[in-house]
Length: 239
Image 1 (tube, rainbow, N blue to C red):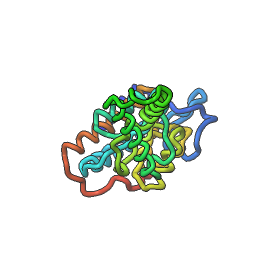
Image 2: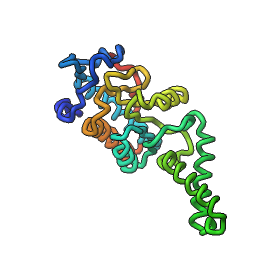
Image 3: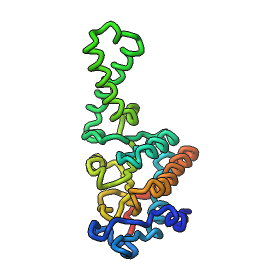
Image 4: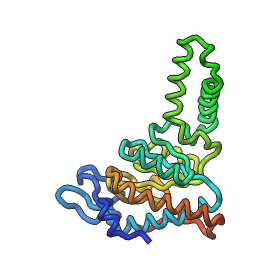
């Protein structure tokens, strides 16, 4: 069970200024104080538990999860939890087509591996310096964008989005590909864009850790169970 008091201690309840809110977040807002919306952490806890149940189911089926968090304060945490749970991650920049055009992304991964193989075999040393420099820059660029998904050969079983506003393209691609999505939604976001919205502060590292660590733990628990639950948790949650 998720303890709402711990969510408050982590600052999960702090939303944005009242002049930066999305009307569809109204059911999840407790009150406005000093010009800032405060999130109802009781509802956050309920939806976080729902997301955990669903992720256990996904992991128990043997499917992988994709973490997406490209904002500065989320990058390290996203990589840490993805590696801990043997999941995929995108932490630098979402490249258009990462879900909707996966075949092209796989070609880019193949290109990266080809350059790395040339490097490993010492073949770059036999090429002109200008070409070597160009290939190394290309590899560095591809590595930044693709390192967390280099083994993602098919669509993931679920996507976890740290900020549905910043990651709007990823949100759109998940919907288009019908990949189940879980998203942390601050008071300026639209909760209807993801399958399971988790209302919460998406700017504070403490808040993000309080929301993402239970999700990571659920993935690990699902893997250890190794069998799917009877029903999906993607039923609509009433506000």
